[in-house]
Image (cartoon, rainbow, N blue to C red; front, side, top):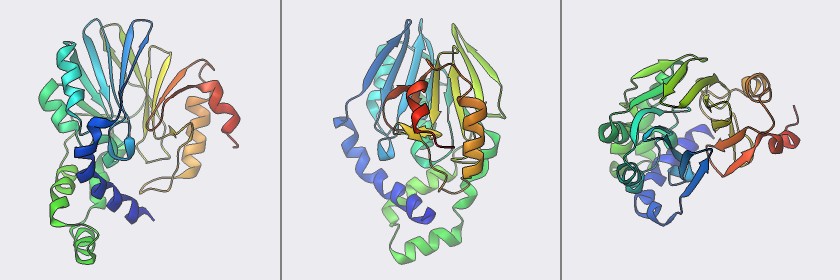
Length: 248
């Protein structure tokens, strides 16, 4: 099951490069904080550009979409950080391009830094031998394996980007290093701890359902009901609208 997921992600990369331009983006203004969503990553993962007064950050640069960088350029946004909620390929694959273009530092939780070790030469060889991965897709795997992260966090760190105040909430479960980005105590970028209007899954690589439930309770459910959740996949929702879907 886990192997199949990763192979499918790599395969989807090649088709998304051609398709992503046709997917609509969403621009939201919350209290003069601009939140632009590009749902153009692998499996329609969301890439966010957040800004206020010309300063900003990105969340999950997994979108092979030139309009992301075009939006940053046209709006003269100085990107300080590229936050990765976790290191699955659909959330980090294009972080190096984002860094090269913007100069922003790539930030990841320390517990997810070694995710690349899953892609052993033996495992890749088996995928290629079986035809599950082709030579044409290998550059994406190589690129993913060799992504370098500038700043490794552990939870509770705070970042000031002008008037944007970010706090890192450690929320493992979907992966062992999953984290949420809590902005101005009003907006929460959940990655895949919450996606498609529901609690995320723990079926991939280092996922752990017990951790997912524990940290959703301890880090997310304790927030105000009116906190706006910006998910890893899907649209935004209020925390209070998530509560009826939680059964643990």
